[in-house]
Amino acid sequence: MNILIASVFSIDSYSRGIMPDVLQSQIDKYPDATIYYLSCSNTFDVCYFNINKEPDICYRCKEGVSNTLKLIDGNFQGIKLSDLITDEDRRIAEEFFHNNSKIDFDLIYDNFEIGAATLSTYISRTRDRDLINIEQEFVKELAYNALTIYLGVKRFLADENIDIVYNFNGRQDYVRAILRATIANAKDCINVERARLGGFIETYKNILPHNILNKWELVQECWDNSNLSNQEKIKIGSEFFERQRSGESIIFPSYTREMKKGSLPNNIFNGNKNIVLFNSSDDEFAALGTEYDNPYFKDQMEALQALTDHVGRSLPLYNLIIRMHPNLKGVKHEFVTRILGLNRSYPNIFVIAPESPTDSYELIGVADKVISFGSTTGLEANYQGKPVILLGKGLYYYSNVAYIPNDWSEIQELLKSDLVAKSKQDTIKFGFYFLTGGKKTKYYFEDNSGKGIFFKNVRVHYYTYAQRFKSKLIQIAYNFFKLRIKL
Image (cartoon, rainbow, N blue to C red; front, side):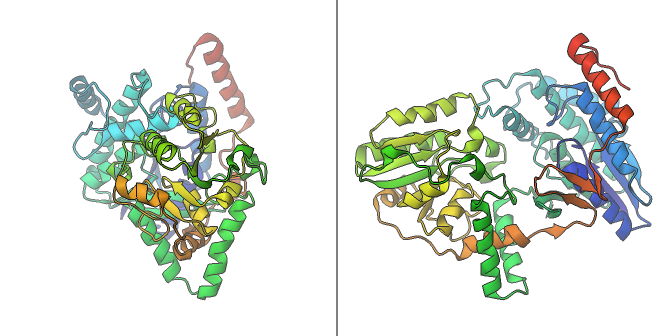
């Protein structure tokens, strides 16, 4: 059996601990297999985690991989991307981008959606959802490098007769290249993703972890296949939401600690009913493909403007309270400014800024109905017994958590109608999955902060004093003299 385990991103990524666990687990299971462990190891000087090309980051990434692999017991072959990519791959990539100079969502090579994969990185790192500054040089480099990876890995899989590939996440440019190269060879690519704190992972065969329908199927399988009683499952599923409300981070970062408990804006108490809208950072989903396309609006900004105008003009006895997502704090792009400006549109429109200490759980409490674009706040609201209107795609799109309108006329009807909350049953299933789903790893562990990552009880990445000194030397040489030295 021939196995490739790809860990392209090996710094500031959960991959740095999870993929070595996959490697050791595969060695344990198939001691006679031919196993390759693929890393970047400074093949490129730009990636998702180093768009500014800081050489000390590349050095620490390369050395960290080397240190961790010394902890592996058994036979495997460590290889770098540079071992796979040939001059011919680079020539093909250069020719392709000479003929296709624009990086957009429609840019495709064979079965590899280079444009969407590259823009996924760009948007996540810059928060520039509208692609205003897309002409930056690093964007073209990411796309070029991704295509060379696709070509090199595709050939390697065929030449070495690889049976199966393990990859991390698969969303961004370099890792998407590995996913598509594997599928192009008619082989299975297992995308591995972190499930939650404590050392739990999920696996996705030939699809991205963000696949909405697949996620819902996993949630249902976890519930249906559990040996626990229905009462015990309900208790565990409910516990997730109680712990999340208390400020504990379980899967997603909790913003509760940044809120002032019980805090609400005084001006919303005007006798009106409250429609509370929790926007999400739709820039994070802008490059995930058509599955995440909003079925009603071009984007959330268009939705917010339409809802503001409708409630402001046609529903004077309702407040529309827009709670901006806390992770938009510090984002300077125009769409953030435009949302904040909606506050001045009508007297019954209120916008709560990302940095506001307003308690989102209290907002849910005073809501007559909640609007979500797919964030987990919709689950939280349903759990609190509030009717939820879903105006986008998200984890619970295929479940019975929210009202899902067919068109704008149905949205208007839902806004003015007295609604009753949907059953909590599916929401509790999600909570149960968040606390019990996924597979426990044997060698990988993550502490309760989500920052301490360990492999075989050794912190990843650990560095020797000599490595730390060299990293500092490389950093100083670059910052003060613009010298890119390699040690």
